[in-house]
Amino acid sequence: MFTVIGGLPGTGRTTLARLLAARIGAVHLRVDTIEQAIVRSGLARHPVGPAGYTVGYALASEHLQQCPTVIAESVNPLAVTRDAWREAGTGAGVRVVEVEVVCSDPAEHRHRLATSSCDLPELPLPDWQQVLDRDYEPWGREHVVVDTAGQAPQEFLVSLVNRLGEPGGAEPGPR
Image 1 (spheres, helix red, strand yellow):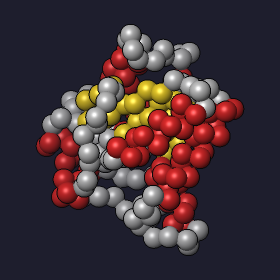
Image 2 (cartoon, one colour):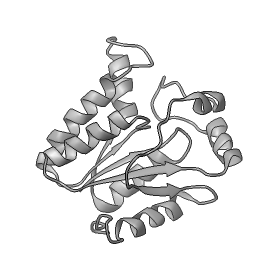
Image 3 (cartoon, one colour):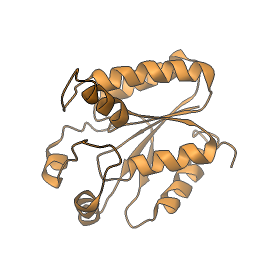
Image 4 (cartoon, rainbow, N blue to C red):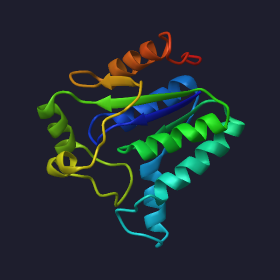
């Protein structure tokens, strides 16, 4: 199974991806990590543009040949990026599940951004206005939506695992 997790900064996307990867024993590909490595190499500055995603698609394709359970996590704001992730999974012959992480409470979302810290040195974190101004296209096909508002990380993990077990979703892996 290839799980593609997207959502705006501050929604709990990375936290959810990490928790899910640990729970089901998946490889976790994080575009922020890839982009920050490109910046540290001296080849680019933020914003990196499509390079991080392009490397992510290649890594996903390769990992899916070796490990049947991969999670790719990024903002994934555009249909073209979502399509490319999907193609990486279908090209590897695995089931693709797309997950959008949202925080439906604007005050909570804003507070998370204002108080969050980053585990990637020198990764610029967006402020609330940058999140509001960001290009983020609506998802045009069926996908799983996880709303993290008012929930602790373990709660929204359980919500996702339950959703993945629904008909049309993916089977949760070993616990």
